Length: 152
Image (cartoon, rainbow, N blue to C red; front, side, top):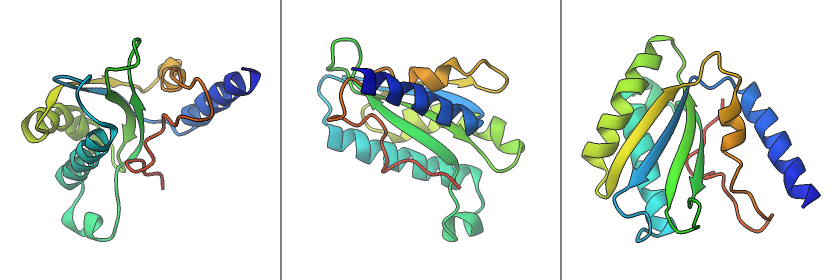
């Protein structure tokens, strides 16, 4: 248990240092009925669409992506799949673009999407950086959805 507590503590510290601008929670209509494979596919599709909406075509063709960390969680009962993410752009104008486009893209382009709530993460005490690690209960289950994460 000590190892897990240390992992959460160091994970939160590392996330805080990334200075992400926004924190989002994306849910599904029935998170109890969606598989991990579907969550990953939907999250990848969503973030690709968001990248293409915010960044220029040239940037995306060169492999540039919005910096983000994506976490897969299952809720209190362990059965309601959803994602949390921290994200930032490369230019301050990206803040509003991400803020307004993310919920619209999630609900219009993801088939089983319920909603996406996005919150400002600038200037906070960064408690959200700790929140992302809350479901780490053993070293056998990843919460970080590495297939969707991008850091420069």
